[in-house]
Image (tube, rainbow, N blue to C red; front, side):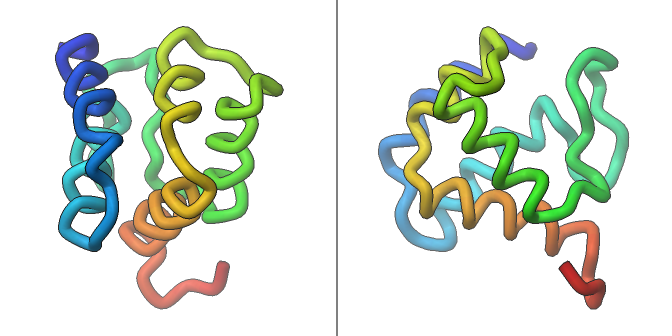
Length: 101
């Protein structure tokens, strides 16, 4: 399941652009990381309650190589800085409606 989700992420990343496309890539993230529910994979962190700054920093660190993971390093390298910001914002807003950043 995890490899299938990762494959879809890698295939969909080049077409990210508008809001609907960001939702598609966010759904691929949710496939492994979960959203408002717990993830099905105990070794993969759930994105619930992570703040935007933390998510942005972690994705940027994976992209730069400062932090490494067999899967996330590859995925993050395909994201633009704008992609990272939008995904971090999406997951923050998903679980923090009305909360300050």
